[in-house]
Structures are given as structure tokens and as C-alpha cells.
Image (cartoon, rainbow over all chains, first blue to last red; front, side, top):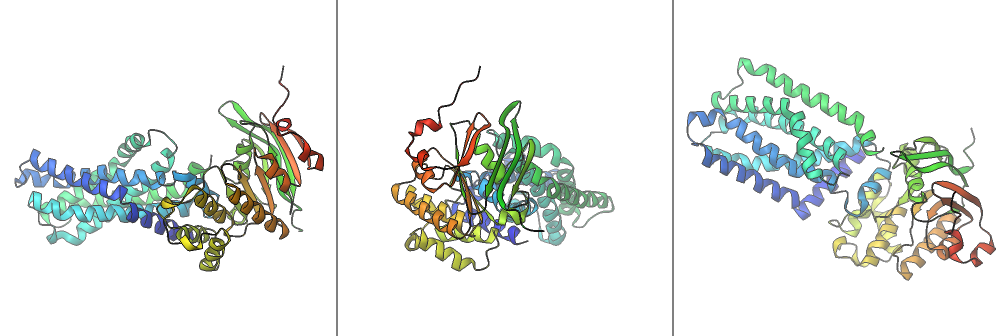
Length: 223
Length: 237
């Protein structure tokens, strides 16, 4: 695990210094939420019914900016070669990158939550803990898949375009689950009986794609 | 089982980029404590071979051993140091943070002491808390050298290490390499700067279009030959 902490620490430290990805991501997410608030009548019940969808669309789009940087950050000065030549395992590199991206995404989401609450007149406190659970599970799904595809596309010139093209279709089951569960919590305040399969799907997605990424990352990085 | 006597062993290594053979059956053997200068023109396959030796790329065919083990094994990589075309250091971090980061990745026991020692060796101690993005080119190069040495490797794989180094950095690198050889370290270095490389090398290998044309000990006569002799090869056909 030594490599995991070293990579996560370095990525987090680099990002906090440059603030390149996090500034872009927060601004983008807030702009999306603002534009949607113009497009829909924010206080209407129908809007609340699609609130989970709006929130996760903002998170997914803004998240791509952070995920793109996770491996692109290593291209400067050929740092990726220096890291791959070091004795850390591929899975340690993946987990370190994923952990840093996950924390950065959570920061973006936690900044967006109160803004969303104000724009759309939604009370987030009545289902805060279940919402946090969905947020963590959904964000990990976005991170696990996003960091894997970021590694796959890091040497492609159009990586900023390729990452979303690969990520969003593959992420759609997890996104649908997160959207449905978030909407359910924002309208009813608790998980309903119909939500259990979505919750199981989200957990299953996280486990399967994390395991796949851990197993395949070495082959992705060293060809 | 006794440890392998050769530090670097490449057996019939082929590498294809698509249909193009970048390496064509290269076999090399470097004994411990020696320095192999890998010579050849641009596109001869020097970088491809070094990347395979460093475990950054897998051979399409053939086998590679570093200190008797496969290059991708963590135990092998812990004992090898790689300096490629890029300097491999982070602009947002300070000089000390960069060395500490790589010391952590290599599992160096006393990271702080190792970072201080190498900052001192490359004469960057006084700017250790300065961010690399503010460094001059020469300072960045010296930090890259410290990064490659911070875990005191047993095998050094250096891809054109003298290119774009100023005189001071060339002198520093030569001294550090001589010290490393004195403690039994092995080096494989590719280069166009023949004078600097041949002064250090005990062996020479010449690659041409992916094929090994010559491999043998470096002789005094080689130092006296004009550099062009190493890069002029017969045309096929």
C-alpha cells in the first residue's frame, strides 16, 4: 500500500498547488446547474423529480475534467515512465490515482450540493446520510472507470475527447442507478422498496469494475 | 543457486511497432560492474531496447533479464534506475518533494536523509524548497540525475543522459557514474555524445536498424576514431 499513498499524496499535493482541474471542474459543474435552473422551473415538483438526473449529469461532466488530468498530469517531463519504472505495482498506481481523483471529485460535489439546494429549493438534510452513501458509491463508479480509461487514453492526442466517449456509455448503468436513487431520496427522503435493485447494481458495478481495473491496469500501461 | 553473473541479459529480443521491426533479434550480455555504451544512429533501436530493459515496454519476442530476474518484477525495478529522454520530475513540487516522492516509490528506508544527501550531491540543497517550475534547465537536469540515483540502484539504464546537459552537469554525472561503478553498479547508456560515453564505457554495442552490428570491449583505439565511424553503416541491397 506504500505506493498507493505515495501516488495519492503526490496527485493531491500537485492539484492543490496548481488547482488546474479542480477550478475548471467546480466552475463547470456550477455553470451546468445554473443553466439547468434557467431551463426548468426550479421549484416545480416535476423539476424535483428529475433533480437526481440533473445533479449527476453535472457531476459526470465536471468529473471528466478531473479524471482526464489523473494520468495526463504524468505526461509532463515524461513522469509516467519514471513512475512505471519504479517498483510500485500497477494496482498501486491505479488505486493511488483513483483515491486522489475520488477525493477531488467529492470536494467538487460537496461544493455543488449547497448551490444545488439553493437553486432548486431542495432540502438535502432530511436524507443526508443515504444521499452521502449514494454519492460515495456513484462517485467511486465514476472514478474507477474514469481512471482506467484515462490510463488507456493517456497517450492519445485527442484524449480529452476520447475519455468522455468511452466513459459515459460504459458508466450508464451506474449513472442510471445513482440518478434514480438520488431522485428517490430527494423526493421521498428514504430508500423505497424499488430502490434496492438499483443500490445492489451500484455496489456490484463498483466491485466489478474496480476488480477489473486492478487486474488489467498493468497490461494497459506496459504494452 | 548462485546469482547470475550478468547484470543485463537480452536474448534474441524482437520488438514490432505494428509490422515494423524496431528490434531484430538483439542479444546482449553485460557483466556486473561494467558500463555498456549503446551506439547507433537515430532510429537504430537504442531507446526501444532501453525501454524494454527498464520494463516500460514488453518485447514482442525474446527474453530479458536484469540481475537474473524479469524487468517488470518489483524486486528488479527496486534495484534499477532509469533516466529517459524526459527528466521525470514534477514541476508543481519542490526539489525535495520530488526526491521524497521517488524515495517513497522505491521504498528507501531513510527518505529524508536520502533526499538531503542527493540534493547536496547535485548542489541543489540551497533551493530544495523551491518549485521545480522556477528552476533553470541545468538545475532541472541535475535534479533528474538525483532522482535516478536516490535509491542507489545496482543497474542504471540511461537514455542519452548527456544530451542537453551543460558542462557542469556532464562532469557531475560522470563523477556519480564512476562512484557507482566503484561500488559494483552496472550501467547501460545510449548516446550520441561519444567522447563522454566512451570515457566511461567498458563495453560498446552498435545497433543499426534494430540489429546488433557489434558488441565487444571498448578499446583505446575507439577513443581515437572519429565519431562518424560509429554512425556510418553499410546500406542494404
